[in-house]
Length: 222
Length: 169
Image 1 (cartoon, rainbow over the protein chains, first blue to last red):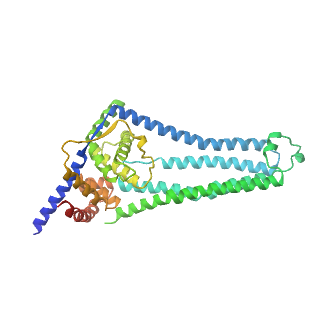
Image 2 (cartoon, helix red, strand yellow):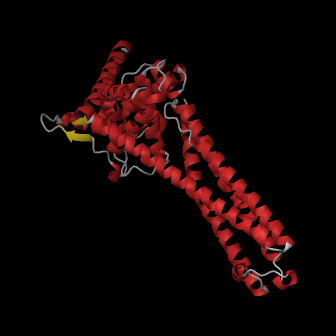
Image 3 (tube, rainbow over the protein chains, first blue to last red):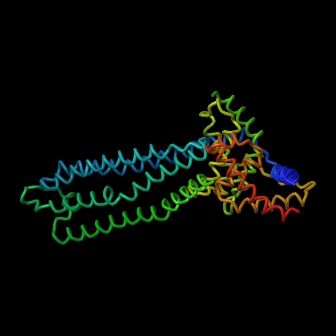
């Protein structure tokens, strides 16, 4: 009885393997290798180009910030505002470092790892990204808002310092009303930035981490 | 690896493994992602990583790892760029019209239905098992122990057989 059951199981097993192997014979896969390698090289180059331009975009925003606040640091005579400019430059340098570190950690996708290792790797990367977004309030929203707050608070009457710079004077909020309006605008802007990061975390990263954890659990279960 | 040698090697391994890769992609492809999209992503990853392949492991095992990892990644929705507009023009999928065995196609449809009832990681074990790989080879691809695979496969086989037997008989 047992022998016949084993035999029929073996037969079914072989039948399934035959069905499986024949399934790919229903279509012909033809590959023009020379053209393919050209297309793949083009794809690699285009992806690298996109990554490079994204890096340049991110870094150039910080560099513009450094140059702008550097100029204001030397130009503006108000002491509190000068301190805010110095802190802003340090913050922009910190942001460049933070983005670069996160990028280095996230470009290590190795598809030739075992499935278990790959899942671990993906989870670590996702957790790092989620940590970055989750804490964005404390490093990407509150610090620049506080810097801007101090910067605006420190703006005094230019006449008291015998300072004249028509461009800076026309751009800076020197009156109480314009200071309040600018601060409200900045608060809304940073609140929006925080909301965008939080949304990306809840909508994209958290479900991905959950699905990785689900797969890890499946792989552990017997 | 010199360019000419790399091209030749790539052509060889692709020719030898294309049907195997397609079978795996076909199981994991769920609309809007099509098997062709996953297939070309696997081909792309093979090309990209070929220089880093260490010859102390089998190239076939390496290809299985890339195929399974790419397909599982599509399930995690980590890649949202499987777009038809990005299809490579150098890969052609042509249905073979002559001598189509309808019953074989139906049987495969049933097999696919039964595999779809399994979870993602059991699916990967099943496709490797159906490709006639030993538990040792499956262990090398998945990172699980042979014993763990044996226990899992016993359960998966039972589930698969219960599902498929009434359909194909």
